Length: 422
Ligand code: FE2
Image (tube, rainbow, N blue to C red; front, side):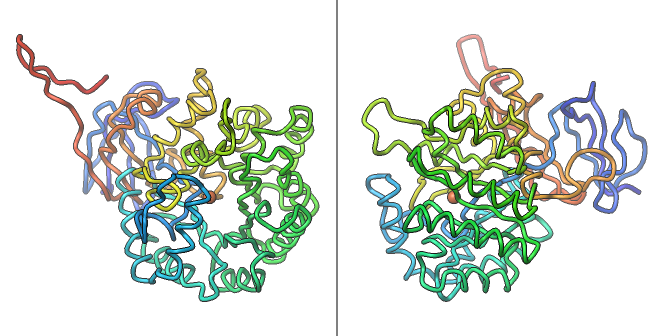
């Protein structure tokens, strides 16, 4: 007997409705009108079924802390950093864990079953590292969580920063992080990239750095990141997150940079929601959008995925951890409303994210993990437009979240009608 049979699914790129059969945590068959008994049968009703959404860039140690110990009155990055500095000494393991687990339940309800989260390693106690390692373990059956050792205050700028970061890796953190633009000098930033990539090479780990998250057109650590990736043979294992200075760089320089990034097979993670409100704050008018050049990177064949970055913390006061909302924001902020670009937006929060995280068994073909989401939408475009209900979220062949379909009843003089915006 099958564990789960999903009937009447629409899968992007497949004609007509299909059924999806799941057994022992895997998809075993995809096709029209699959016969056979199943422990559970769900009817997708002609709605779009997608592999789970992937969150490529998040900060789970800060999430849902908004208002602690006070609100960010100005909404700026600088005040956000101040508030975080005031909150840090007040953090407790219980509090971090409670908020992280709450966020995980939000993620599941939104169909996000893979999250790469950065965790601050500049705290000498590494408290958040220990807590998020526990959360990773406790959520293992539901969400693939990857931890990035993130030296928030700079690996060289922090006393003992390299040692703290390597201790976090010894504890089992998955990825080497960095923040070269926050080091004291351009040269220290360059050196930090070299040191961190060498640590990753020695340990056989991936790299994911906050890189050039500024409006400074001369912040060019991504060039060093591409160079070190190539030098150390780390192609495909290295990610540059944010890369917002690309927005402000000279076009001629970018024409040299893009091929270097493609050659190094960098993954790039764009965070449109948060960088739209953080960047351009020193501008009068016009105000720069301050995002990486995602369409141009995609056109070069570079893997670009999207992250939410923050949900209700000192830096970002909104969000429900909805990756379709992130893609929707990307459409506007990156001017990606062309037909092929709309497809690329959906990929940025699904397949491209899976590539950034190096997930295996991702997809909706036989042999893949039986992880999927049934959306209350008929197509990818409709999903981007509506940010619809995730009717069913399935992990390893088991339904782990259900949301009722949304429709309004509008009453006019001639009677009632249902409105679902389709
Ligand atoms: Fe970030």
